[in-house]
Length: 451
Image 1 (cartoon, rainbow, N blue to C red):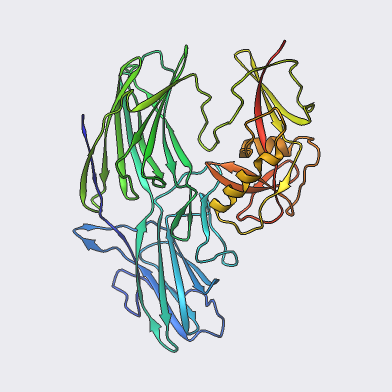
Image 2 (cartoon, rainbow, N blue to C red; image 1 turned 120 degrees about the horizontal axis):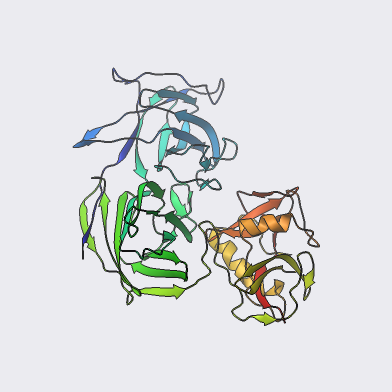
């Protein structure tokens, strides 16, 4: 058993200071956010500090300034040499700073959309960067230049290497999945508790070693226990091993995971978690074998970004319906053949509004689960929210009673998070918040075999 170490401790600093720039810093006046009204100056600049080791800041840094719930200033700092000067009226302000998030990867609210507890989520198909955040209160005095010191906190962990040895040479695919992870931010707090991240490993020249090296940033685990799932695909089937890690994994940790396949039904895993000299050092060790894990032969695996299907366990014998037809009043969205079994994706004939608007994630999920039975069909089980991919199929179908346009949004689930999506002309657009017009219309998969 190898030891797993984690040292973590280095913090990122964003300084807000008054009229004091060092020789290596350049000052640039930003556009005034309150034209003709401001009498208090807030000067913002970034620099790195030395505390044993040089700290770094993830650029660009977005600076949101709020008066109550209203965003009155939004500026961007792109380097340590840049400074911002923001002229505001006297009063109390909340300053929210976000480092390492760009509009390419994240849905960054505009000035008119932003709130102190605004959501920050990844765009579809994008990956996290080295995300850092902070929130501070500042009191600005009339006719004065005001200063504030802000410490940016890293909000992500880093999976930097995975090594799996002695994998059967017949394996054609090996993946590793970590879950449950947070999926988004609400202000500087984590949100969306059922996410996951998956990395595909690369087969090495010896045919038995699979590895991943690189930088895979991820939000930390949303629970006390993180699950590692190792999936090995071979010509005769797929085997998945799971193991629960009780050790704490936090933002600021670097993860190096190594494992050895020791038999047809056993995996022993050791690894290290090393903080980048940011905080104190902690040694963690664990073993991974059948007693600590779970093996599933030929599972219906869920890809990253999808949701587990609650499909019916029993196989129904009968005439396979065609796409676009109805089966027991349910609309048939798709029919997929898998090893002699037809998986029929069904859309409930019933839809209903279940939200009042403005619910939190937990409140929305509770209301959806309570209302799910009311949209089901007798004799057919496994009803659930549609995934984003399934929502695109629904949107492009001719299913009866479908609503489209911004006034009607269907509820779906992505990475374990309940979301609302607008159905347009064959396209699906995810919304940023819940509304009273959101519609619940569940789907299920019926497994069938022809007579």
